[in-house]
Image 1: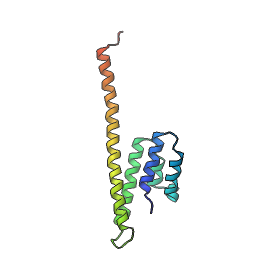
Image 2: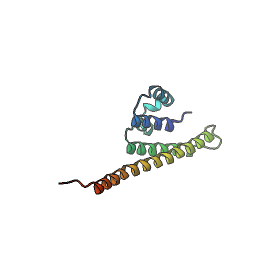
Image 3: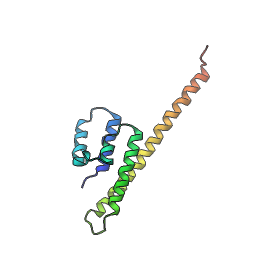
Image 4: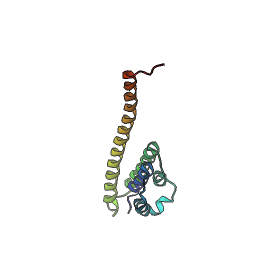
Length: 125
C-alpha cells in the first residue's frame, strides 16, 4: 500500500518550490508507481505547479481517498491503514491550507507596506 496522496503532494510542492530535488523526486515517483501514469487526481496533483492548482487537486485526491476508505469493511486488512492514511492526509491538508492563507496574508501585507512607504515619502509629480 502506498501513500499516494502524500507522495503526490510532495511532488507538487517540489514543482512549486523548484530547486534540485532529483533524488527526492525519484523516491516519490517510485512510491507512486503506476498511479503517476493513470489519469486522476494523483497524477494531476503530482504535476500541479501553482498553489491554487495544488489545493484543487489535493482536495480531489482526498475525496477519492475518503471514498476508497468508506468502501472498506473492518475485516479488510487495509481498513486500519486507510483510516490512518485519511487522518494523516487530512492533517497535511490543514497545514497546507494554513500555509496558503499565511502566504496570501503576506502578499496582501506587502501592498500595505508599499502604501505606507509612499505615505512617508510621497512621489513628487
